[in-house]
Length: 34
Length: 168
Image (spheres, chains in turn purple, blue):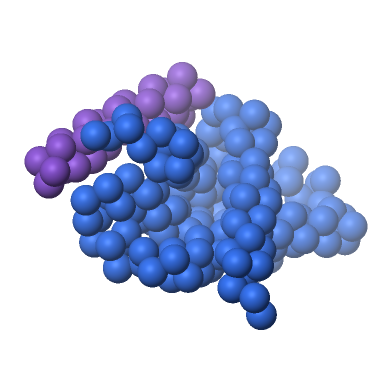
C-alpha cells in the first residue's frame, strides 16, 4: 500500500497539511480561551 | 549551579542535539527518498567490522541525541515553571505544548517502534531474512513519520518563541 511517506513530495505535503491543521486548532483554542 | 546558567545550558543542548537528531532524519530522506526493502545480498556483501562499528555509532548518536533533546526541553519547561501549563495546553502555552507533545511522540516512535525493528534490519540482533524484510518497511515508515512530524514540531517550537502573535 502506497502512503504519503513513500515519496518526498507526499512526505512534505503531509507535514505541511498537518502543520496547517494543528495551527488552526491551536489558534482556535487560544482565541476561545482568551 | 546558577539557575540562569542551567537554562542557557539546557537551551544549548536542546538546539544542538535537535539538529543532530532531526538532521540525521533529513539526511536519511535524502539518501533514501523511496522505500527499498532490505536486500540480504547487497547488504551482507558490503558488511565489514568497520562498517558495523560505524553504523552502531551513527545509530547510537541520534538515538541518544533524541533523549538529550527531550530531557533538556522538559528541563527548561520545569525550570521556568511552565511544565504543567505546557503539557495541559493551557492558553498561550498550547503553542509550545503542541511542540512538546509532538517531540515526545517522535522520541517514543524512535525508541519503541523504529529501533526494535531497525536493529534486526541492520543485523545487530539476529533475525530471519523474511523478518528483516518486514522490519525494513516498518523502520522506513517510522522514520518518515518522524520526518512528517518534524515539520509542525519545528514550526510550533520556533513560532512559540518568535511569533506568539500568530496565535492570538
